[in-house]
Length: 229
Image: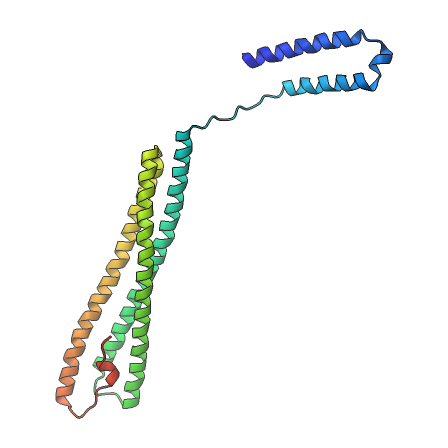
């Protein structure tokens, strides 16, 4: 209503102005000065007809909620990338361990049946695979530290969002956190199972080597095989 009243008032002003200008002599109306005045009135009238959108009055609470939502989005992205990196590292570590287990069991099954050259070749492969396992283990430990940091960041972001009133953002980041923890736990279980089988292979290795040495004391056991992993 206030806007309509202002528009009506302005139109009334325009009518009075044009009525006054119509009384001015034609020679005066054709002068550059009066032409500029008429143009200004026309522009003012057109602007009066354009509705202006009022700028939203953002409070401190709304600004804090928006900032908290941005923090939860960023922390969720960080958690997603860290989770993917860690699960991939755990998977590759488990694969490397299973490969080492297969090589060691193959060697144990062929004790006394290989020539020195063949035995040396297998041991070169086993030593190389042990180095690969160590590399994959270091990689998974490094990504695990990053992932733990991402988890703590998400927990802090969820708490900040909840306190600021951005409850939906808090619920979302907590849901993402639960999913990430579930994926990592599954990958960690696969990794632990591989390590358990490697330990069982180590016990089998000691037993078979003891039997082999007892049955053929003259046969020399490769020095690399007796070294600790």
